[in-house]
Image (spheres, rainbow, N blue to C red):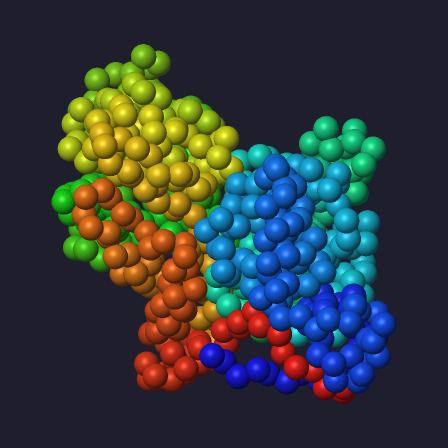
Length: 561
Ligand SMILES: O=C([O-])CC(=O)C(=O)O
Ligand SMILES: [Mg+2]
């Protein structure tokens, strides 16, 4: 039992009740009611958080659709954050899909319709000369983590304009619920640079800036101005980029990673969780990592980020760097990515194959190209990863072809939300007679097959970023290194107990997520020390700092400031 903390607040009366970070509703004590002039504003009974939770549960159970559940939880968050997080932490497995992937996707699509009250900051292009002033609006807040999006590539749902704000809100809810970051440290931001989504532009309820997207130099200058303003205001903040278009994701990562403490979750967080889960899958497969061949479908920043981190892992396992790279086959719209392809981004070119590499392959149906299926036939992958946003492109033919040459095919259809997933886990298990080792990006129910129940690993970056952020905040780590992500992957794999071995279990259960995040935070801190980013500290000191940073959702006593 942690001791109750005492906080000083200068708010009184209705203002205190209307401040979600401080509100306790009818759990304000009798003496607090006197001090803060709350008598009469609340019914006479003084309740505990446990009683309030009962009421919350009852109300939640009345909801009949996922969208209603999402709206209810968002409203609770905007009313009483402590109670919201208590409900989340105690029911994380059930509630995470409503606050986060997949239902948050619908929340973004319907953001303008379900909009109730503001949260975070909206920075729109017409106000580009006032960014410093806009940031001043939250001057009272001790901001330590920002998640920012421009809404252009929301999950696999494309451009949602301002509706993309659902994502920074959802991600930061997980920072708190899963990583124990105090909610007062978190700030969601949407850069509203317009939208090319015609449905949104035509929607009379659309709350965003009704304009097509700003592009090119103007767009980059705007994001530059935003980052510069953030650095001025909060030089030590952790800035997470989320759901930018693929090319922008990588570009901004390279542009800012040495300037401030930032990372791109879709590139680095996704790669890190995939690597961590692949480590567990490889263990189950019985075939060493150094012996695996990998097809990645979706050669954008996420897919290429996954490939690069897996290559690094193979190299750490003793494979020659060139040989490791040759084991990866990237697929995009044109089929296998080849060096002759026009318009490749530099991060794609590094993973492109040459005609010489493939001299032994029979020619494809289209000369000089290899389709996805032809690549699977020739490359004989042992691991297949999808980050395409294209539902069902892992067809029966693809999976059966793969499974014909490998005993335990590792199949990761990662696209979000659920309706964008490259294959249904139940199909993949059926097509491979239960041999496939599966991870998805969205949550799936366990699949019954051959009298057994197969859990489906939710290979989602939610396993990584809360712990990473916790480690960064606890030790004041000033930059995010590749070594920190690799350490997070390994810590995730180490946290997996593997179950009883009867069916593959690749990830620890979500119900353990706070303990997993703590372990990741400690691993990340050690990696940062190794990389020379922060002063050395012994294990006990690191653990103590992490524990001291973890916030628990319980009411604190208030005294007047
Ligand atoms: O939000 C998620 O579930 C994972 C993610 O970053 C994405 O799909 O963009
Ligand atoms: Mg994302």
